[in-house]
Image (cartoon, rainbow, N blue to C red; front, side):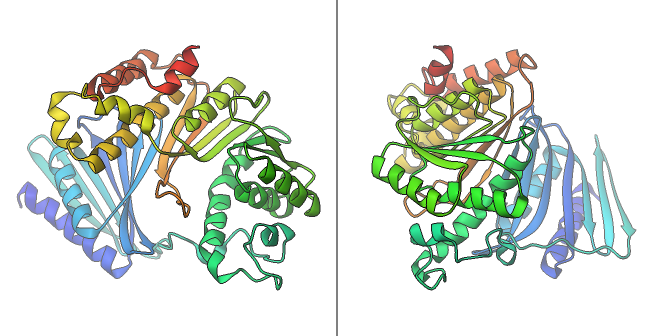
Length: 392
């Protein structure tokens, strides 16, 4: 059996397990490709609103990145990866395991039967296990999620699902903070959907005492938020008027910013780093600062086909901006992960950067600085806004 045949046999087994619902996991290891910090890739089956997908978790040295693919694209990625970049693959199903190994010109494929193993749930949204189960809360009515009867309004169903998803993501991150009563600062809080939901869940379900401060420029929203917090009996939740840079974040254990436009995201990251926050989580929106520099035409000429069209330029600007943000966080002692979040009605942006402080300062500093310099040179970037804040 030739190497391509062994790879195709593994891919066929993967495709069949995916179709039958018996896929447990496929893990690619022994990476020797062009990305120096990529360690492995884990693939599982998920069910989304648009159908069944292959979910790839790219495990880097200091972060994880998740991407979902349709079957044809997923199998092509697997085929190329096993041919060129990964030396091993471990397929686990409910009925058998399959091990692929490649050592130079030698390849091996071994199958082992197993019994009693169950496939994991593929429910990506986990709608049946929503953190917020009671809908008769005063804050839900005040924010327009429920009506007078305490039932979620028809036109607010998507927002309610989004709120639950936010709690599902953030509650474990907050619960992991070691402080006895962590201070969470939400930069650009708006109406405070996340703040009310998170406080309610942590206080009533997890029984985790917290303090949450929502920072918002619009004074009317601040007044409304404080009134609703008082009416709900949420003594540890408050809102404060002002800009992100004006707010004194000293003592913050977590700094969060959802869809803060352009460099406001960097302001929030800067405040979190300076406060020494254990957790910094941002869902960026707009990437104008870097895009303007790329539009000036200073990028590597070889990228011209990628930057010629406006929509591609925008995507490359997003990628470059958020990659530099992640690297600058790593440079300042944080372990970063980037994965899909949920968008709101006003923006399709759905990437979440999660940074957890773990004392990495000094480790691999030269390598991170070299990566930052290389990306800036490639895309014609003079200075990332966050760089300037941190250098000031």
